[in-house]
Length: 139
Image (tube, rainbow, N blue to C red; front, top):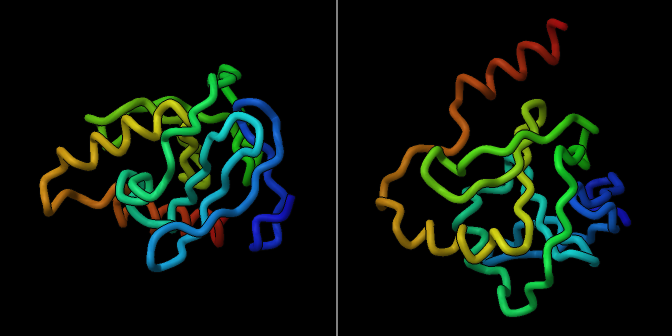
C-alpha cells in the first residue's frame, strides 16, 4: 500500500501492508501495519514519543516479532536500541534513521514521553544528518 510519499511499505515485524495515518494537529504521516499494528516513524516525522501520544493503545494485538526485521524504506537490517538511550527498545534503521515500534512499545513510548524533561536533546544529532547527506552525494 502506498504511504502517500510514493513508496509501498511492508511491516518489518509481520510483513503485513502498512498504511499512512495522520497524527496530531500538524497531520504528520506515520505508517501503521494493518496486521500487527506496529508503527513506522521516519526520522523527519518529529519526536517519536510525542507522536506516539496520538496513537490508540487500546487496540493492541499480540505483536508478531521477526528478529532482525528489514527497513521498509531501504531494506537495511533494523537494529534494536533503547529510544534516546533511556527509553523502551525500538528497532532503528542505521541507514535511513527510521524507527519501528511494535504495537506493544507504543504505550511504553507514551509513558517515556511523560517523563522526558521539557528541553530534551534532539533524537537525531545534526552531525549524523550532515554525515548522511555527505555520504549520499560523495559516495
